[in-house]
Length: 307
Image 1 (cartoon, rainbow, N blue to C red):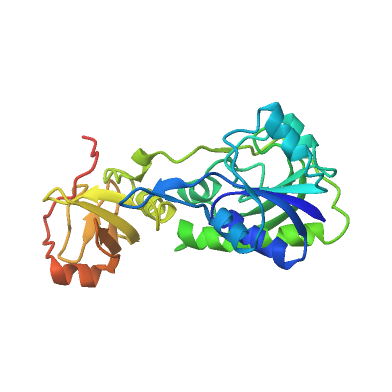
Image 2: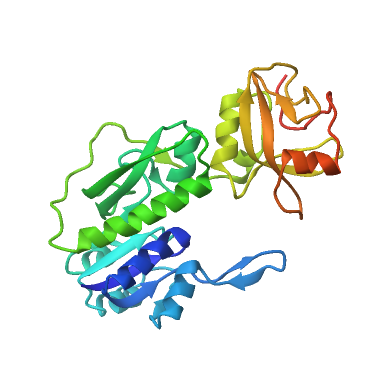
C-alpha cells in the first residue's frame, strides 16, 4: 500500500520500521519537531524522524493540521491509508477522510479501557493484570473509533512501564503489518461499557507519598520506571529515584527506614527498595547504594506525608 505514517516516540518508530521492512510505500512521515532534551537542552529529533531520515523518507513536521494548506498537502499525497501511532496532534476531519481507506491508529490498550495519552502507565497504576494493542479506525473522538484487531498481553507482577512499552511496541508493529497484509478486517464498534480515560501523566504524580499503601506505591514505582522515575527526598535533601521495590510484611511510621537495608514503612505495609538512582548518577542496586552511603534504621524519607 501507499502509506502516510504519523508518529513521534520509540513506540511509533517500531511500527514504522516494521512497515518499511514489509515493503509498503511510505509517501511521507509526519512527526513532532525536535524538542529540547538533556542537560544542555539541545534540540533532539524524535525517534521517528531519525528512522525516517535513515531510510530517505520525506519528513513533515507541521505545528498543526488545522490549516487548509496543511490539509491540502496531506491530501495531495494520495495515500491508500494513514497509520498513526503516538503522533501528538489531533487529526481534523479533512485529514481523517483524505486517505482512500482512512486512518488507522495503533493504541496501547484494550479499548475502550484507557483511551487517551498514557495507557501504559495508567494500566500499571490501576493494578491491571492485562492490557494489549488495539488497531482502530480513527474518527473525530478521543480513541473512540471502531476496532479492526485486538490482542491481549499479560502485565507481569514485576513488569515496569519500560518493559511493558517495549512489549506493546513490538506487538503493535506486528499487528499493523498483519492488518495491512490483506483486505482490512471488518471494523467492530467499541463496547459502550468499560470506558476509562488515561489522562496525561503530571510531574506531581511521580512523588512518593509514604502514607499510601505499599502496594499502591510499588505500582507507582513500576509505572514511572525507568522515566521519569518515582522519587522522594532523603534526609539531606537529595532527590532519590526509586526504580524498583518489593512489598514486605512490616510496619512502622510512614517514610521511616525499618532496618539498615532500605526497607521503608508505608501507610500500610512496607517496601524494600531494590533499584535506586541519585541525581547525576547511574541506577544501582540497593546493595551497591548502601556501600557508598549508609541508611540506618530510623532514617526519614521525605514525601507529602499526611497526618
